Image 1 (cartoon, helix red, strand yellow):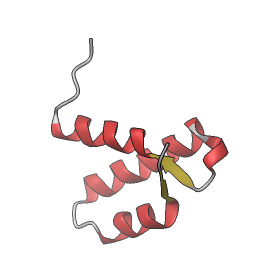
Image 2: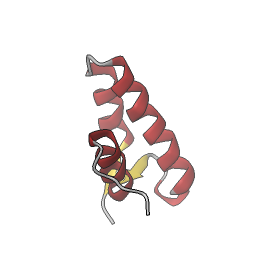
Image 3: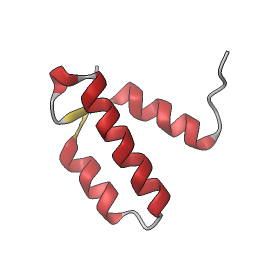
Image 4: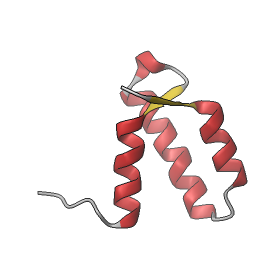
Length: 62
């Protein structure tokens, strides 16, 4: 699966004007490092897509 380097996420966190989004991206990053420890320094793309959908209100729990 595809991964996003930590440096890219760090740049987004530091540059984003919305404090809540910065916290969300940081939390996502930490979650990804815990759930996918083999990809140290990367967050799985599927996790980023899930959090994006949740943020947009598109994810429906069954």
